[in-house]
Length: 526
Figure 1: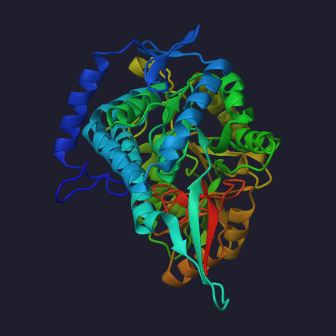
Figure 2: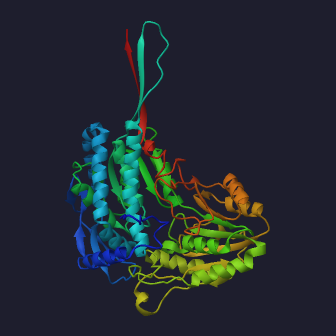
Figure 3: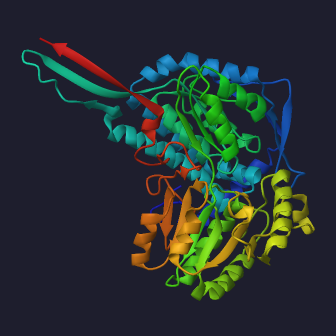
């Protein structure tokens, strides 16, 4: 996904080379010619089927049947866990150099299949082509970053101090070792990156994995399983099961075979997993990323063009269905009216349509439930404040067969209204004037979440902002995205407070060790 002059990231995706579009369109035609197939669970290197399947239809057009996937049961989940447990002794003792060689081979296969992946993600999620390409490109980058960290740290084997005992030569070694079977429960909105990032790190560390994707995005995970199969991973090292969280998910969470778990999704589900997992025989690592209610602050000294560009991209990219989406906007009063005009103008310029088409920015929301939530939230906001633009579904023409919603900006909502603190996960953003940056910061931090934030202002104000904001990923004066667009090795991604459990960010320096536990080796010679 690279050339001499272009490397795809979420920051660079706004001006891609023409060859990227040509390759995507070719892959899209091929993918569309093979819709409607049936896919199994991937357990112990083989397909497994359940008694029932479910249909996955595209949110772009509900008449498009993408495929049939297995409606898994607790029995399927347990079989996958047993397969991973059986594979663990050999995989965990494989030299780390051999593990990362296989992982880098898998990342190379993702590169080779990137346009096919992107076409599937666009059809399955409703991402525009550039966001879909970014998702799968990030998945390969996350794998490589984990491998690079393992290599840079020489397998996390460190010689400690020698005991000062005369007549003895005492060697103390600290080493990090894997836990066992790691479960990854991934979300629909980044079905490649937020699946591959955790399980790539888990595999790199020497764990074996069982993956349960969101029921809205089973196809992408199936394709990832095929990549790891084709890269030559031993049977049982990587397994996938599809099906409801109430059956498959609960079986994975409650099993004593599960040594660790990574979940990305809502706060309510994440905290349920956290509490359920704590009821096991002994403490086990739980890595949670649970969403956000992300603010941006616009100073009276801001570049308003950059601010409007970055905020609109972060509020409405992927239809606001990002845990990092910019849903709260606080603007200093001297520039409020001018900035709101720019914000509305930029929002109304966004093209809504089939996300596989080249010029589309906004595709559909992911499912009927989100579609209904959009209607309900807009009715509530219409009563509470002023809809500046948007607020309506697209119910006419060819888009009427999908779940298309207009991007919504809302003003004049009282600060005590519940939707200032509730994560809607939709293309809805609320804007409010403030009299000072101190007032804006107090409002920005006054939520249970702390994932991302954005700021636009002077250099001195930026330093103050970074010193006071309570969030894990923070951007200043960024036209490419006010609160979104993190990339492995550049902006490690993770949250504070109700947004995350580990305090360490994915794609960063401290993430890979979360999948390992320390062991000390003391050896004495006389």
